[in-house]
Length: 177
Image (cartoon, rainbow, N blue to C red; front, side):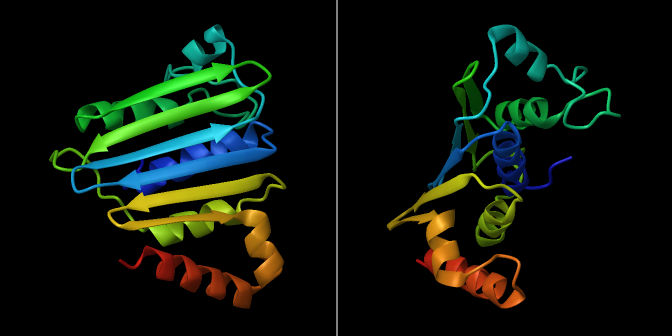
């Protein structure tokens, strides 16, 4: 179960990385009334039939988690976005990648809390993947973009605790209005 919108974003972004993407782009936009995110990956993509199975909670490909009989990531995303007065759009092409857009009405009582954006971004940047991760954020009068390779060039390896602390502090500073 996902307790925050940040949990959903993290899960969907991780799916793109696990689909063999060389690059994943994450756009997160927030207004007073809406939270929206778009995840674009250039991973393996899905056929129409594979996409139909991916949104069925009682089906899994058995590859990501061999012992599981169900897959809930996309079904939870769809359910949560729709129950919050938002929606979800998924476009995928086999061999080219997937684009997932989801939006949530922040005024709806059924919308989960947004969660910690800087912590979410740090978690996503730390995923064990060689893929380039590009994060774009828009909130009120604040816009920024960060790229994983640029941050590693500046901070060094994300395996160093000191670098992770600096990364967290940097991401928090970008969020301040």
